[in-house]
Length: 398
View: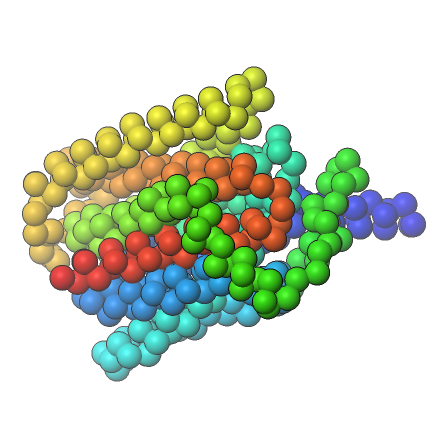
């Protein structure tokens, strides 16, 4: 019994177990948020409220993404992730109010609160994902995390597709949002199952973190130094653009061209292809037969080629449907002649997103193994990413 207990304890405190736990949080919180956002307009016919909510979300995300690493270092991962996860449930619940009141104020306010929570959650997630594994396994751990996150988006797509299969409307009903709220609350509570970083050990017996004392003053100085750190400044263009394309893909491809059930159908494949793409890409990122520099250059080349193909296809699609498609005539997945090309393009958009994010986190993880620095680096990445997203969502309104 004692040996069995020891095995359980070792497994619980292993980096992979901890990454899986935080991955399950992402599965049910950011993953389902992605599915809802991927519907275009948050599942509403008029995307204005969703655009304004996302602008508020990413505006506060800028601040709390950058400060999130310091908050995680000061408060620990368990409660910061659990409390932050509840903001996703509040955001989904706000659309029930919007359905009945047609007043977007609560949705916009909940978006701002979600930006605060998400900034902290992603800083904690990023720190765990890139600092817990050894150098040779970082690509694999990033792929596991991304697979779990995008499985949440896939599950959300399945729910949205199944519930709306016979729907004649172009907006989601209350019951859909209720399902999302319940699942997101469960996901938030899973954060409490995480172990303190100081207790997590790798298979070789090494700790994932050297326990160091920190305080608010030290963390504030650490945040300010990010803005003069040459490595962070060099990554700024990648950070800024890493979610910029979501607005166009969600609102102007999925939301503007497809009917409600096909938007859910598309979400299933947009997010599920990301899980597969991450797994394949991790093989390259962890390939020890190539130097780290060579792996980085090849990965960058792949991202460059795929994104140019995506935007070329998007331009052709935009020229075909410059003003979208009227509500009653939108594309349905059963109409293969009209819908097949746009659906495939949307799936490839998901692949592009996955390899972009995997490369970004792999680069960040290669900069240092210090978990406190990595929590700040991850926060900076998400903060600058959110600045770009806030600009993109407002541009869509204009």
